[in-house]
Amino acid sequence: MTGSAIFRQISTVSVFFYLSFNQLLSGFESWEVHVAAMSGLRHRILPPSFLSRNPKEAGFLLWLLHPEPSSRPTTRGILQFDLVNESRENSYGGDMASSVEEDDAESELLLHFLLSLKEQKQKQASKLGEDIGCLEADIQEIEKRNLSRTTNALSQTLKESTSAREFGFLKEPLCSVALYRSSPTSNKNEERLMKNISRLENAYFSMRSQVQIQDTDAITRSDKELLKNRDRCFSIQNENEGWGVNQTNDRVGEFFSGLCKYGRYNKFEVRGILRNGDLLNPANVICALSFDRDEDYFATAGVSKKIKIFEYCALLNDSVDIHYPVMEMASKSKLSWVCWNSYIKNYLASTDHEGVVQLWDASTGQGFSRFTDHRKRAWSVDFSQLDPTKLASGSDDFSVKIWSINEKNCIGTIRNAANVCCVQFSSHSSHLLSFGSADYKTLCFDLRNTRIPWCTLAGHGKAVSYVKFLDAETLVSASTDNTLKLWDLKKTSSSGSSTAACSLTLSGHTNEKNFVGLTVSDGYIVCGSETNEVYAYYRSLPMPITSHKFGSFDPITGKETGDDNGQFVSSVCWRGKSNTVVAANSSGSIKLLQMV
Image (tube, rainbow, N blue to C red):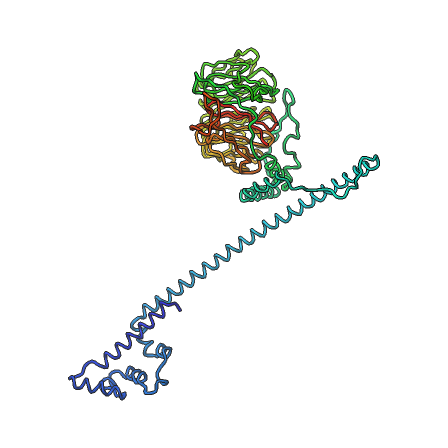
């Protein structure tokens, strides 16, 4: 019984006493009769009129006035007395009924809470049990692999030591083999892992759940042969590049590979700084960087209306105060992109704010083809690596246009619903083209059928500014919603938006309004940030590996300062499959960064 119910019962008894005594002491003819009645109460004598009118009350009062204290009623007895119960029911019947209902409701609410909490905890315990089961299975698998690797290493070491003794090279006996040595590097990696344990946990279980879904639901695109179409003019890459078939089916190996890639590098080191001050042109945002076929030279382009070509090795020379370009080509309008042909060493293409797509011969510094079909600013251009005579451009006129270096006019047009911000050919298929759109979507087209998209990738919250192929079946997109997204092209569909194809979202950098650059190599992803930093990610983990603060250069002294002055990193480019990246910021400064 609740406290409020007990209080109501005590109140009822008090009222009953008051009414009973009020009836006893009221209605006397005179004060003398009243005094005589009160005197009689001491001897348990009640007025005759009260006895005749209220026999039950009279009996109750005589019980209360019993001369023997032990014979008087207890509190429980008073509460259980019939007369009190009748009075309580008559006077407070409605209140007591509602009190009982209220008590029942409170009890039901408490019971519902306890049962719901129990069910929730049971689900959590069940999920925790499943997670522990997954971990135990993977721990056993890793231990098995380590044992096998250790056994092989020990066997090989013993074999080599035996051969060395036979030839007299080994003077001391081999006592033990150090299978693992703790080092400062491993300790730092452990600290980094523990610092990001929560995000790593989410990535691990997310990857494991995706593998389990793949095991139970193997439905993929029936026309996925487009992703690895290899009919091309020349061969540039190995079929087993990147993640092999065995790796993608190995859930433990895939996650372990990501951890190894994550732990391989922990920072950027500056290997060179290109000092190319242009005091006469303060607007010097570098919008694009591109290496030539042999990676001996790289080109820059931006709002200065100039394409500048620099020798890569010269960037490594710290003794040079000012780096001069080996070639400089002037455009009539601000440049938005530059791309080198991966087969013809001296060919490169550019786009500008007037919508012009220009082909250049870097050996002479002259333009030799000028395409003007775009009606508005062209943001991006890309040469096909599998067909080096073909290139594509994207524009604010809601179109992607396909060109040939052997034709004067456009050889194909893809219409879009919004501005096209970037284009990218697949390096594994001569027919697959992807581009990013201002309506938050990434689209892929089979160039043999450009009437409808091969797939539409939806998931970003703002415009898609860059797209890059990580491998034949994986695309990464950058957006001004501060994220990068990885897309599994095998899970896409030609009908509707393929939102479920997003396998991972990477975040950490800041990108809300500018083009900040995106480049990929061997699963590593580097992008710029509006905090004037360069960020590095690996494809299977959601958090950055490291970042580098670009800083600001004083145009007079040429020295770097800590003041950003609102600058941002505007372009990044890997140098092939090395661990070096060339990055530029909005002030025109260029750095060669090496991941170590």
